[in-house]
Length: 118
Image 1 (cartoon, one colour):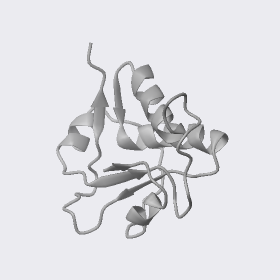
Image 2 (cartoon, one colour; image 1 turned 30 degrees about the vertical axis):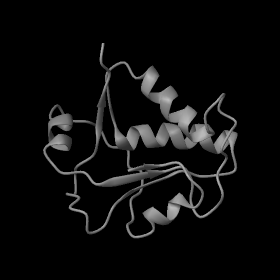
Image 3 (cartoon, helix red, strand yellow; image 1 turned 60 degrees about the vertical axis):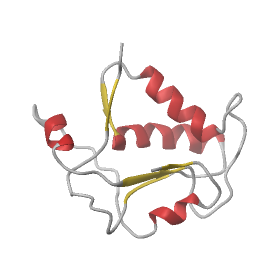
């Protein structure tokens, strides 16, 4: 779920997920996609979020589009979130959230994978 709305961070309040940077093993992507991933990427926490400031998009939407456009290979949801969060935090008074959704069938170790199409 990607939610770009005020108070969308309430969707993430039921689960804890921090950002962890770990070295990738050769089977990294295959391990991610072998598990079900049920996560939410929210534009903010428990605050109003900016609807503009992104050249026709919200700051959050602009950041997501920018990261996906600049991706030349494979990026997982956690990497997408880390970059989007930094872009949003320096350009708006909101802090995006990325969490597993409880009771939705998420399997620990799974994540979304974005692959650039030619």
